[in-house]
Length: 302
Image 1: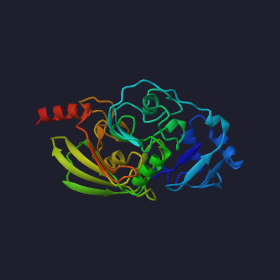
Image 2: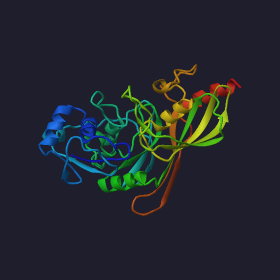
Image 3: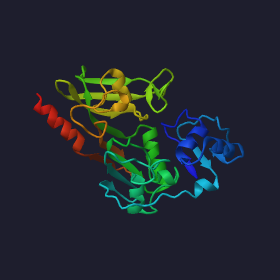
Image 4: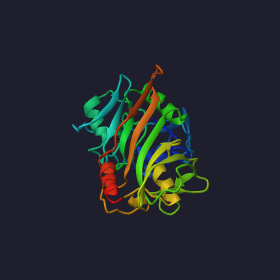
């Protein structure tokens, strides 16, 4: 099984990374496999404590992992763009990007396996077939899919080198003060709540561009451009500034009067060079159901 580390995996221990991507194997079993030579990074044997870098190529050889299979499922997908090497999907809110140890069905990967069969990259294993980057379960919007490993490496390179534009729209709690702002604050694992991320000293460089589109009495509609792509970056940065994403119960907004399935956040815009030819692809979708519902409520309260 082969994996390609991205910027979200940087500074992660090799054993921790393999626990997260193999799902069913314990840390002890993974550490034993690494120590016996079952893992290589950039074709070299490493210790479990090896700290990954963006772009590292990991090979993990263990029969139990290779036998894991994710079942294809007939689930409707909205394909916004597709060519011979890639596709862009409008992932709905509430859908996991890929299976986990506890949820192995109903994910985007299950749907992709049914729709595209074997025409998906496998650089990151069975659980992440075709997945180049991720969206949180309750974040909707545009997600790039690689149909082969060469395309996967190309698209991962665009992300790593910041050679594509990703924009989000969100509604935050509170009246955001600055019309435009660049948030440049390091993000890492929360020191006491490991299921969360936080702005921490020594964290990874994280840059978010914020633009206010509209202000309401107690909320603001924002346009967000991601310069880096850290886990939960938008949610963490905005919460740290005191303007958490509406209905984001993990990062402090609580549930508003307008109930939605968690955070009101949508990846609505992508601009990138098509693999291997350089043609510029520019994609944009309209507000999703959550954002439309909340905006209607806020407009009526003006």
